[in-house]
Length: 278
Length: 300
Picture: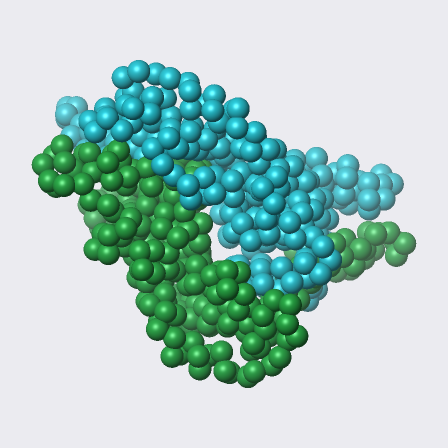
């Protein structure tokens, strides 16, 4: 067969590139702004690529302590809630697969239903409770909320993965004299490591990106998370702020982007597996 | 598959059992999700303000909401926002997923590129678009005036005419890749043989799309449409950063309205009532949507 000129393929590449331009342009624009000197940003005829490259905005972000403090808070809350949510979700997902009882349906039902309720409805009474026990404006309180916040999705994914582990493996281990705790930690857990990695990345990112809960709960400037701190910057924008805000946004986006790229494959296969087997 | 008998005989009674394994989740969910939720629903029937005693006031909040012009405005803009963002996100996302699924070179490289907006935190999406819409230094005005489409700079985020489309474009921008990535995963589960077979039968691209892609993608598509609809109806962060609900409350989505009532003015009971109305509306819409889906499925 004679090879035709690949019009069709070129059209597909062309369309994808249109998407890529639209989806990347704002990021590229702000990335470029973060390297432009302030007069150039406001010159009236700026180019996409900076004419003069400056690091002044990055330096001013690094010298301003608040952004790093808030980034540190986000990291602490993210790591704590990630560890705890995995510790809680693994045994539960295992129990949900190995036992058939009404609790499983109740939990699966809750996972779906919890998606419908607007966060404001959960936030109001939680706020009252946390205020009562003195955990508003505290990283511990925020960590607790983030555990419950990422739990539905983590549990859903983990449930799908545990289901795919053959029961025969467990039987063999028990015949060799393993106790249940040993089975969970020595047989199930190692097989779940990729899934745990995916879930951990997911819950870290959702804590890192979360805004509403932190915005309502964290009132002292020293306890603000990164997103709250950045949102506060936009309130007092001016010409002098555009560059540093661009630099701060780029710094804050890099961790999410790296984690997202790592997690992409696991995330979707987990979701689809959960949907097909669930 | 796994019978109960086998399960029980495997471990002795002394071992860690179902209750111990599930206890942490059940406890967490009950204390920090279930009880707060029920209490939140209840607070929607009280006139509670922070610090005051809680007093039940029946459906008074809802009568007040019904007559509250601000609430209706906020609800209207909430519906416009949700329908348009969800529609555009699914439509454009499906287009992108189909393109990425057509066996071409660089597909995984493209996938990583288009993933980036989704990886950008919502607050930063707001900051990016604020800088795009900036009247004098923003890219949107500069590009439009370079093309000769506008003569004077437009203040997108404080103009009554343009603020809604401006905010919707920013919202859709960040959500296209999420829809595309999940739909792409769905597309990849469709067996290739189906396409090969229909190619043999002489079916064109459009026929294959209609008779193979769409029917096979339907469960994933339905799930994603329902989820994104709920997520978009509950949007807060990006719009908060872009406009704080302004100008003149034109972009005050229901979540922003509830936040202001509850945490800015302290009308906790009233804010919870707004939350309750949102739940009822979402449940009704999803109920009808799922019913239509199920009916279609059983007809086949």
